Length: 152
Image 1 (spheres, rainbow, N blue to C red):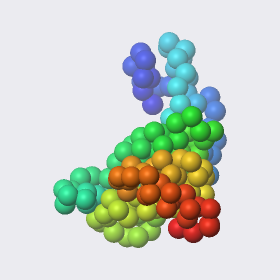
Image 2 (cartoon, one colour):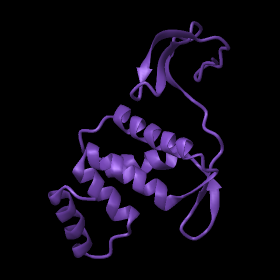
Image 3 (cartoon, helix red, strand yellow):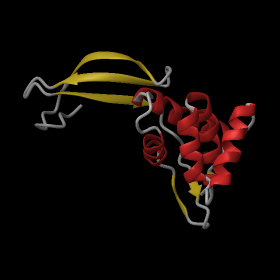
Image 4 (cartoon, one colour):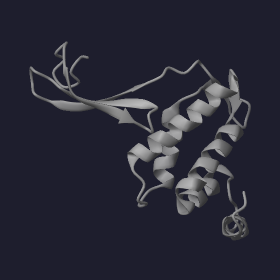
């Protein structure tokens, strides 16, 4: 793999290990030319999936969009980047297993919320408030009450 820093054509793998609950391989690389170190992830390639937005627009699926939303929801929570990447990989796997070529953002949001609820309740409420576009405090109370009852 080409070095990100100096462009040298043949970096070396210094360490390789399973990541994201065995859904990816994390590789630590080092450049023999400039000695820079960086990390890469090897994941399975998803079949092209089109996401149908709420307003009907269509766009290619991008895992980064889910990850960025999760990062905002999990700010100042003790949730690692590894856990977030694993959650996104789980959602990608659900999409692939559904064998759909098009998936609605509402379905993706539900999958993310279900996984996030198992990971961290505060992050779940934060994500839900944006995803479900909460307009008043009663919507927060409702979702918090559901969590207290163990419901969905």
